[in-house]
Image (cartoon, rainbow, N blue to C red; front, side, top):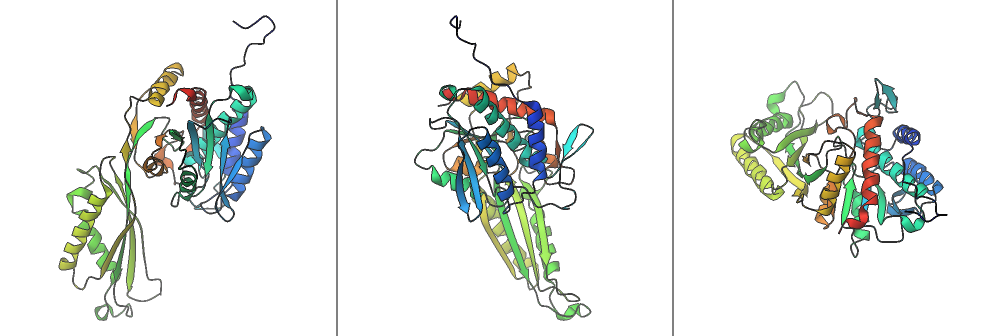
Length: 384
């Protein structure tokens, strides 16, 4: 019970109107990977305006992360959001718009909704808590996640001597906590042929035809059968010679392979190489190159841990359904886990609409995400 002249301590309370404005402003700032400076300048101004200490962490020239410690104590938990998006399909239609209660726009789900919720949670803590009551948490806003994760890699490198125990990454999960994460393997294939005039294909060797036959051969392997395999196999891009009326002399293909948490990317690469070697014996005059330069193992965290137990209490208090899942895409979570930091993927929005022309979120879900982040921050002293 407070003393006679002591005022009751105010509980941190979100400003829903400000969060709505913040979300729309973030979507309206075009920030594809490599061009994140405008959105970082805006966020830095917002955070500094609330009296928070904002540190710029250089990633490369004119590109930097924002690192925001809430208290002088070493953070036990970082809220992590990436401010970059994929490139817009149409520069006239990437901005925020609302239809039937849905907020559309580039990055609305992946992951400006998560970023807005995290920033609003921090603004609330800074406004409603005196410095001596602020929990040991930090906010990390990174660049480059949609490319190769160089922003998170720079942060991890900077804190190798004192890594935080936990990070919560606001990728779109529909507010379902993901304590497990798929691994990832990117395969690059190149076929070479011989260029001739397109009216005389018999005098050349068509690299596109060779590539199609290679892909059909790979697709017959049980490991890549969508009906029976747990591996997510997706041909992401194919391109060939753009020289006009000719038989193409080369063809390039990129394949994304998302692997269940305990699947070793090296073993999948071995299967790919074995099938590529087989293709060389089946396809006449095949000249094929296969490389796998990007690989990230998955992980699965035990649910008997302080953060998961606290999250269950938060969900019960907020009357939210409790279930956990594995994150099926690639994210910076793989990098953090490899560095010995425990990541939880948890954010508003749906992965199904990310990177599409129909990408959207809802203000209600973003508000719920901000409430969850706020509650987690207030409980951070209990994370060991």
